[in-house]
Amino acid sequence: MNPFSLIMGKYLTLTNSFVRFLLVGCVNTFVGLSTSFVLLNGLGFNYWLATFFGNSIGATCSFILNRSFTFQSNVTVKKAGIRFILIVLFCYWISYLLSAVVAEFFSLNGLFTTNELAVLIGAFFYTVSNYFGQKFLVFR
Image: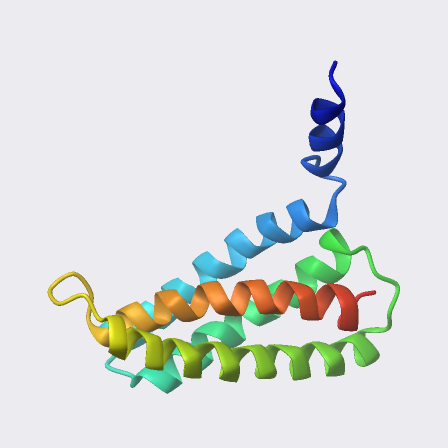
C-alpha cells in the first residue's frame, strides 16, 4: 500500500473527528434546512425567524451528537453548553448576514428566490465556521 493511501485512510475513517463532524453535520443540515424551509415556505415565517428556528433545532441536535459522538468530550454540559451557544449564535449571525448580502447580489432569477438562496449559502458558511468553533473552543 502506498503512503498516500495510508494517510488518506487514516483521515477518512470514522475515528477522525472531522469525518464524524461531517456525518453529524449532514444530519444537522437536513434537520435545520428542512425546518427552515417548512417555516419559510409552508408556514410563512420571515427569513430571519425561519433560519433562526431552523438552526436552533439543528444546533440542539448538533450539541448532543458532537459532544458524545464527534469529539467524545468530557467537558461539562454547562460549560460546553454556554460556549456552544455563543459559537452557534456568532456563526449564525455572521453566516446569515453575509449570505443575505451575497444572495441579493448573486440571486439566480427563476431557480431560487433570494431568501432560499440565502438559506443555502448561509448553511454552508455556518457549517464551516461552526466546525472550527466547536473543535477549538467548545469541545477541545
